Length: 188
Image 1 (cartoon, rainbow, N blue to C red):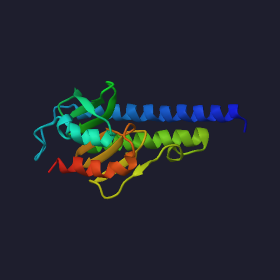
Image 2 (image 1 turned 90 degrees about the vertical axis):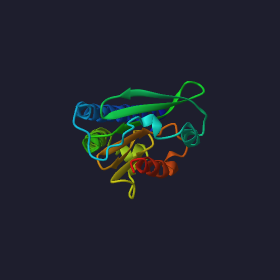
Image 3 (image 1 turned 60 degrees about the vertical axis):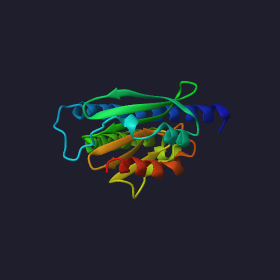
Image 4 (image 1 turned 135 degrees about the vertical axis):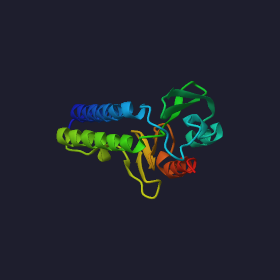
């Protein structure tokens, strides 16, 4: 194939992957309304429901291999919160969203969205998202775990879902399991 065709196919695949991501986010957003409902707290709920309090600046600095200078709870609802850790250049280096309730619903919505996006990519381009980006289930962590180097990685424990973006984390694949286990341990 000539360079123009290869460049077009790469750009087209990237566009389809982005479309798949948008589908996933839209489906996850549909479940977000349920996650912000005023449902009663479950027994054994974590009292401090601020995602920023789960990891220290030093832990995140080691994870991203950069100095963390700012931590910000960027969004929060009654049953979820999102934290962003920024480096010296005021760039977000790590995000963590925790769904303290209805996490299983969020997991199901996310995984269904990923399946739809993957199906669309396979039909349009004849390749799986797994062929384009390293991702997949990870056994032995919480009730279920899913790693992705480009899309959010997920860890489900009971009805709590941890959703994290690892695309600025060097060697994210090797760090994911330890990070996921540390987050699950915060629920004890």
